[in-house]
Structures are given as structure tokens and as C-alpha cells.
Amino acid sequence: MNREPTAPSMEALAAAAGVAASTVSRALRGDPRISAATRKHICELADKLGYRPNPLVSALMAQLRHGHPPAARCNLAWLDFFSDADAWRRDPVHQAFYTGVCARAGAVGYAISRIPAFDRPPDRLARLLRNRGIRGVLLPNFDEGRGIATDIPLPLDEFTFVCVGTRFEQPSLHYASDDQYESGRLAVQKLWAHGYRRIGYFGEPRVEQIVNGRFFAGYHATLSSELGGTPFPPLLTKDHTEAIAWLREVRLDAIVTASRRLLAVLRAKRVRVPEDVGLAHLNVDDVEGAAPGDVAGVRQDNAGVGANAVELLVSLLNHNELGVPVHPRGVQVHGTWVEGATVRMT
Image 1 (cartoon, helix red, strand yellow):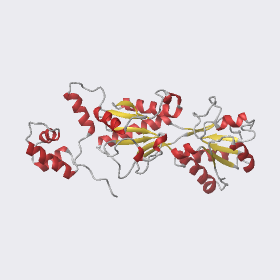
Image 2: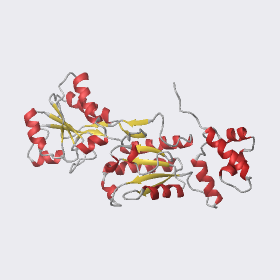
Image 3: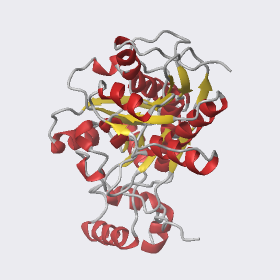
Image 4: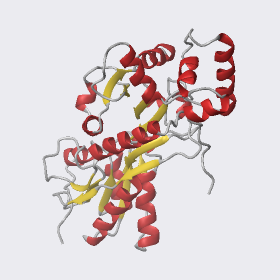
């Protein structure tokens, strides 16, 4: 099995240079107590061997040198792309991610710096992180990012990124997310067990882009390959009122969706749920106007996603894995099914 090359330790670099590790440390910091010739030789050798200083140790030592013993081992950054400073508090999924991030970071001795990134020039954003000694970045989805890593307003080779709740590709980065495929699969399995057979899928284009179509993939594969049912072409639109004609034309008896608004629109148009059509939601804690127990579907462990993102990021930093990974790692957190009033009981 191929493995990513491991950067040499400071001790290995010191052995190769024929000096003490303390000399290497001082030379790489530009300490004038080390001669210019020795500093030049060590820096060239470090570049040749691919040595990279551990960002956690560097940040800690910088704080100690300035007489400020840190309360946490190192800061991690959470980038906030909302234009309104309080908007994230009105987004249940984002809020749960961040709650999980903060809880797990505090438990393992790290601090979280929430960095406003909206309309901040990339050079200023990068300088801000450097000045705070931050090398680990937690990255939630943001609309302008389009799931493309090169759209992230930071130099990819200088930081370690873990994407939270979604995957960034081109190039691919590490991530932690709910298991969208498994959620689509679980919703179809449960609807089938409740006696539904004509099950359709309604999606919003923005959500489908964020999850790379994995909700629908779980729906489609489960119906066609696992249960022997008939998957229908999905309805993907911003216009929720189109769902009314669609479910009647296709003669659906149940819908799988991640839309916040679909249930409210169906009820406003006097479509009875579940008498006329059942509905299984792929994130029951993120449904507009729904009361607890009102909606059947999958409860995502979004706080668990945030916690796992921190654990992955800390592990990568401890191994000094900066930049674009050769082999991106992903953590997928399963949701659980909850019964609710939008699905008929059998």
C-alpha cells in the first residue's frame, strides 16, 4: 500500500547537518547567534529533505517566548462566510456543527477562533491566521466556494483543512460529514417497511450541489438494487410549488427530501400529509415550521460531525500534515431514523 512520504523530524535534520537540534531550531528562526553560513546550510538542507516545522510546537513556543503561557495547546480557525455576524445562529445545521466543534476542541485542549471571512481579501485572511499562529482550519460550506477547493480564499499549501459537513474537491481535501448516502438509503428502507411503493425524491439544487448528489444516490440505489422498486426521476427545483403537479403526475405515495420548506408548502396547498402523501425528511431538525415529533425521517448527528472534524484536524496537525493531501481522509457520521406524523403507521 502506498503511503504519503513522511517529513523528517528536527532530530533527523540535525543529524544530517551534523549539529544539535537546538542549533537547527535557532537557525530556522534566523537567530543571529548562529552564523550566517550555518543558517544557510541548515535552511538549504531542510528544503532538500522536505522538513516542515510542527505548527503546534511553533505556535506554543512563540507564545512562551512572549511570556504568555497558553490556556490551550493551539488555536484552530473556523471560517465564517455569513454576511451577517449572527446569521449562523439562525441556521440549525451550522449551529450544531459549531457546537460540536467547540465542545470537542475544548475537551482536547484546543481553542477555536471564529474568523469572519465574508468579503475579507484572501491576503488579509491568510495574514490574520499567520499572526495568530493558526495552521488548522475548519471549513463549512459557503455558497461562493461551489465545493471547489481552489475557491477557498487561503493558500492551500500553507494550512491544514478539514471540511465540515461537505466535501471540497479540485483538489480533494479532508472532510467530516453526515453520511448522506446512508441517510437516503435509510429513508427509503423505512418508507418501504411502512408499505410505501411509489417513492419519489425532491431536491433543491443548492443542497444537491453541497452534498454532491449523495442523498439521491442512496435513494436511487436502495430502490432499484436493494428493494426491487422503481426509482423515479427526481424533481430538482427552487420552486416548491412544482412539487404539487409532480406528485400527482407521477402518482407518488411518498417523498424523500432534504428541503426545509417542502412540508410547509404541501400543507399550504392543502395536500394532506401523510393521508395523501407520506414524507421522510433527511434532516428532521431542519424543517420549517415543524414541531418536535411532527416529521418522520433521519436525525443527523450534526454536533457529532463537528466533533469528528476537530479530532481529524488535530490528528493531522500532530503528524505535521499540511497542504493538499495525497490521500484525503473522510469521516462519515450516520444518522438515526425517527418516527413522526408525516408517515402513516402500519
